Amino acid sequence: MRRAITAIIVLAILITVSVLEILYVEDKLNNLKDQVLVLYDNMEQDKQRIDTIINKEIIDQVEKEWEKDKRIFNFLFSHMQINELTYKIVSLKTYISQNDYNMANTAAATIIKNCDMLLSYFYPKLENVL
Image (cartoon, rainbow, N blue to C red; front, side):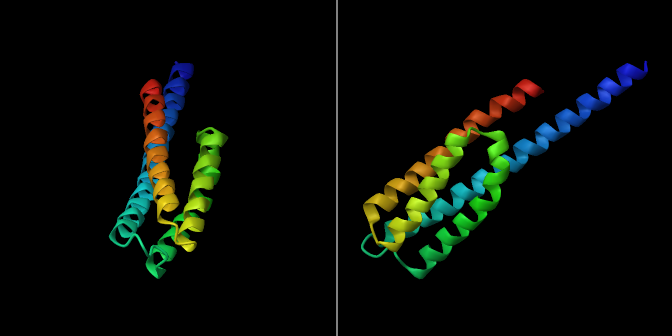
């Protein structure tokens, strides 16, 4: 009887951790995606001048938050996926500072697509646990 109770407690803890993990990842990746979408929309409004102060502040905030979040994501995702997102965020920052709309647009679209891809990979893992 004692083993059954222990097993149930361990199972409940694992399920709780898994649910909290998915909520955390979903929140952080959706936040990253939303910020990049704002940046993307800002760039679409004025394609000739994307190196505005607002865009630079947004990408600085994105990079700062990503550096904080990627430590946890390294435990949850492939390092190559995390490194690719890091590379694209740094590239986007560079392209914005260089006022290169075409490359910045491509980098922003890639970040959005990678966020969607990571979320789609992550959901089945929770379903398997439950």
